Amino acid sequence: MGNDLNQEAEVARDLRGAELVVGLDAGGTRTRALLAPARASGAEGGRVLGEGAGGPGNALTVPPAQLVEHLVEALAAAVPDSARARVVAVAGGFAGATSASPDDPGSVRARTALTAALDRLGIPAGRLGIWSDIEAAFASAPGTPADGLALVAGTGAVAMRVTDRRATTTVDGDGWLLGDEGSGFWIGRSAVRAALRMADGRGPATWLALFVGRALGVPGECLPYEEVSSYDGEGAESDGSHAPEGTPPFRWPPLHREAYRMHLLPAVMAEPPIRLARFAPLVAEAAQRRDGVAEAILDEAAAHLADTVRALKPCPDERIVATGGLLGPEGPLTSRLHTLVPTLDWVPDGCQGAVALARLDHGRRL
Image 1 (cartoon, rainbow, N blue to C red):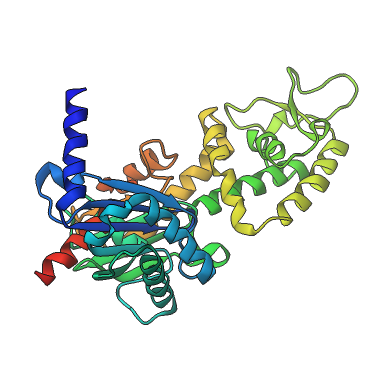
Image 2: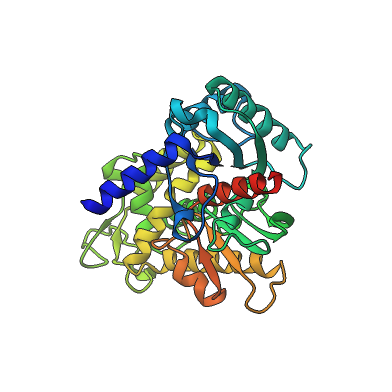
C-alpha cells in the first residue's frame, strides 16, 4: 500500500510541474495514447502518468474526420486538462504512415489529423513526430534501439529493416489480397478453406469444420459430430478414415455436408475479407487438440514469417523486434517461430516506443 501511495504522489508531482510528452500507437484496431515525463532515465523511463484509448488509427483507411475523433478520444483520456499546456513533444506511430516519406498520403493524413486533435484539446503541437506503427514498435524494445529488424504478425504480416530508427526496407505487408503471408488473415482463411475441403471430400477430417461452422452460425444439424465407429449400420458416411492423428472420426452424411457449404459460403461472403482473421484463434484451439490440419497451418504460417525475415538478410545475432498477437507470450506462432528465428524480442505495441521517440525529438531541440 505504501509503495502505491508513493507512486501516486510521484505521478501527481509530475503532473503539476514537469514537462510532458505523449506517445501514440495508432493501429488498425485501436489507438492508444500514453502521457509520460519528458525526461526520464533508468526505471523512470517506463513511468506512465496517463493513458487512453480510441478507435482505429490507420491513416490510410480510416476517414479523416473519424481519425481525428479517435485521436481526440485517446488523447483526452491520457492527458488531463491541467497538464495539457505542458506537453512539449508528441510522437505518433501510425499504421499507413512512415517517417521515411513525410509527403506520402498516409503521413500527410496522420499529421493533419493529429494536429487537428491536439488543437481541439488545447495541447501545444511543440515537437510533432509522425512515424509508422512498426517504427514505434521497434523503438519499444529495451534500450530504444536505432538499428535492426522489426517483424509484425497480427491481422497482417510485414518485416522491416530499421536504420537510424527509420524503416528503410520492407518485406511483405502487401495486404490480404496479395500478401500478408503467415498473418492472422492468412491463418483464418486457411481455417475456412480446410473446413470447406473436409465438407466436399477433398481434405481430411478436422476440428476446424466444426469450429468455423459454429462461429458462422451454421445450424447444428448441418455440423459434423463425433462418432465412436466409422459405420453406423445404415450406410451413413464418416470422415474418420482420413482423420489425422489426434482428430476423432466425424459422422457427416453427404446431405449435411452440402447444407453446411450452402450456409457457410454466404456467411463468409457477406463480410469484408479481412474478417477472416477472426478465425485464427480457432486454429490455435484445434492445434491444442493435436488436430493435424491445424498444426500444419500454424507450421506453414511460421515458415512464411521466417522467410519474410530471411528476405531482409539478417546479420548473425542482429536484433529482431517482434510484435503482434500471433507472436506474444500466448501467441500460437511464438514457439514455432523461435525454432526458425531464435533471436526475437517481443514487445506488446508501439506506445512506449512512441514515448521514447517523443523524448528524443524534445532532446534534440534542447
